[in-house]
Length: 348
Image (cartoon, rainbow, N blue to C red; front, side, top):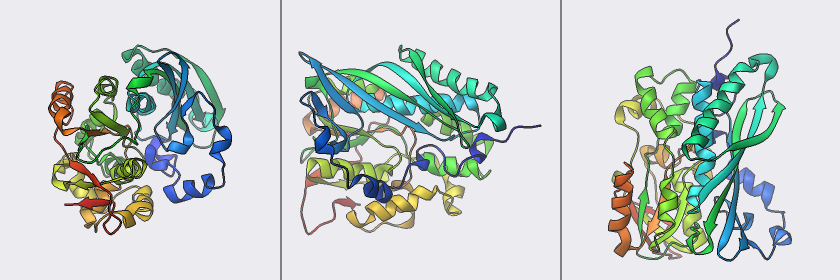
């Protein structure tokens, strides 16, 4: 009997399966994170950052993070690779260097058997080998819906930590990878994405954010976060709120997947469920959006690009670095002073 396609076994796919921002807020709002404070914990959950950071000795710190999601593509090996890239990205978003990972696997054994699960893990191992870290074990459960990801440990110097809270007025904003992967993944799940367009999607989904380690060494890089399930708008709002700043985005400068990939899908309003959940959570904090802007800015990304806030005087250095890594290197906006009578995010 032919096994079902991975993307047909779950309600959502990739980071589009995240719990919606409003629901997550309700889950966490009664939790006293201050009770978990520790003198060595530099960054914990209360900061809404990409990973936790714990000081160990002298200038050395440990980065700890976990990320997992349901299948975003049907090829098991590629799914494992994408999930691994996505989890490791959180270490890079803190300016750190990954050193080890362990796997997290939920698998419907009765429905899919074991061979495909092995392919998922092989995909993750390939990515871990690319960044020279061991996939050192993990944990698995028999689950009705498949999911996979990694818990990743990294290292960073205390002086090199990049949080989402350091953006300064006058900084230029950069996004290293195109958005629109959630729309394309929704098209794949609905059988609407052409096979000819799949390579472009996979290229973005499997591109490592390893440039984050080098960005961590540049003093003029004031803040970094990676764009995932809350979309570019949600993650920029989190950066602005954490930094007590606002921002202006130049929509035409934001990189997206090609019109060939997105055009017909967007015309049919094919998008993940979390697009509208993201808009519900964040739409009131930005200027009025067109339908096209809403679809793209609220689109949940999987292994999305790094969103970087850079001092203007260091922008040229950062642009050269991004260009050398074949990443998008044009500014998409600017950090502004927060004003109570204006939207937090202005879209032009």
